[in-house]
Each structure stands twice: as C-alpha cells, then as structure tokens.
Image (cartoon, rainbow, N blue to C red; front, side):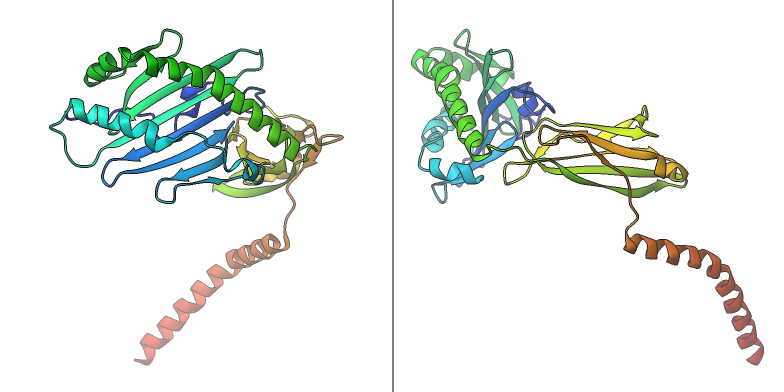
Amino acid sequence: MLLHPAPLLLLGAAVGAVLPGVGCCGSLSHSLCYFYLQVSEPSQVFMRGYLDDQPIACYDSLTRIMEPLVPWMEELQKETFLAPERVFRADLESVQNLYPQNEGLHTWQVILGCELREDGSQGGSLHYGYNGMDFISFNKETLRWVAAHPQAEKVKEKWDDDLVRSKRNQVFLEETCIERLQKYLSHRKEALQRTEPPVGKVTRKVVIDNVEALICQAYGFYPKKINATWMRDGEVCKYETFHRNVAPNSDGTYYVWFSIEIDPKERDRFSCQMEHEGLQEPLVLAWKEEPAEKLQDWARERLVLVGPILVVLLGLLLILLLRCK
C-alpha cells in the first residue's frame, strides 16, 4: 500500500481540530490530550501529554520513563498515563499485516483526549494518522470507526468487528480520561492557589518607512484569562491588532503579546491596557525609550548629518590621490 502525503493530524498540530474548545483565549473549557508518535524501524515511541494547552509530561520508549514537565506533576510521576507501546504497537502491526508488501520505515500518529466544557458537557476524540496522512478516527457515540482514506477501509472493517476494543476506547474517553482531567486540574489548582498578575512592557520595531509596530508583552500571569486592548488617547483603539494566542510558560503561568502598526509620530498617543484577575486595577503600559535606544537614535541622527560630508571628503581625497599619481 502506497500512502501519499495528505493533510495530516500532525503530532501536536491539531489540538484545535480535535478538541475545538482548546486554546481559546479566556475559555473556561478544560482538556486533557495525549499525542503519540511511533516509528517502526527501529521501533520507538514518543508521547507528550497536555492539560489545556500546557505540556505536563512526556515519554520516550528508549528511557521508558514518564517525565513530568511541570512541578506539580512530579508527585504523579509514577501514575501510568497509558501504556503507549502496548496499546499502539498492536495497531501498527495490524495495519502492516493488512498490507504485507510494505517494508521499511512507517510512522503512526495518535491524538486522543477529552474535554470538560463551560456548560458542563463533555467531549472526547481519538484520531490516527499513518505514514503522513489522516487515516482513521473513532466515533464514541456509535462505537464505529470512520475511515479518512479509502486505504483505511480494511482497517475499519477489522476494528469495527472488535467490539471489546471499541468499548474500551469509549470507557477511556468518557470515564477514565475525564477522571484524570479532573484530578490534574485539582492538583494544578492546589499548586497555583494564588493568582499571579501580569507584568509587561511595550517595545517597538520599524516595519517600513513611516510605519512602526508597537508590541505589548504580558507574562507570568495566572489564571489564563486576560483581556488586553490597545488605547489611543485613552480610548479603545480601532486599529487592526495582531496578536498570538495565550501560551503557557514552564512554571504553569502564561504569556501573550499583541502588536499594532502606527505612524511613529503618534507613538506617544498609544498605550496598552490589561485586565486580569490578579490586578486590582487595569495595568496600562506605554512605550518608554531605553538608554540604549537613545544612543542608537543619536548615532543614527548623527550618521544622517555626517554621512554626506564624509562622502564629499572621500571624493576630494580620491581626486587628490589621482592628481598625485
């Protein structure tokens, strides 16, 4: 079987597609996701677990150790997330046995997880990718498999007949995963009982002539939800704002940045305002010129003034040298 590259649920790249509530700035939904990558030759498994969008543990079959990635996970290190080699080695062998003419390197990607939404509802999903393409997924409501590619139909037929396997998947997504999600949320909450207010700064960079970007950065805050707005003369700015999603730090806090393009002459009219649970009042930040920037600006101005003079002097020196010859 020759599998051609196609849009794939790559490891760690499809959180939003698998669990739609994940990664939304300010969302009160919570999720627990596992991302697996297995290669056939030599046989090796890599795994990373995420609570919401924060990596909390990883696994490598070479060391056979589940390594915590956040401090509060250390006491849970001995708890088995999943037995990745046992669970997924059989899957890879199953696919290869259906297509025995294939030899060489094969990869097997798995994304599974569950979600607790703000309205109390739950979600769960299980997706497989094989050799660089979206391959097959599990429907926990019908206990049936959905082939994402014609070449997955044989696998679907075989796995649909394995009701024990399907029921086990359903129990994991609807019960085991949800229980773990609630447990991890509880441990994280205990480790981060107090709120952490954001700290931040505003920087700038030149985009093109007469256009520069002001960049507002906030970091070290917890919980995740934060409201950030650009202000112009104290009013909410209607300019287009560029921003990245709130992202986790290794210590469990979060950071975010957002920028706006302006006329440098109006730089002093802009400020960014942040509202967060850890702040008693909004934090307002404006760009401040650093000493190093002052020196750079001074040097740049002098270069503009002195540059033409230097060119004239060099030209005169060249003429003198030619006449001497």
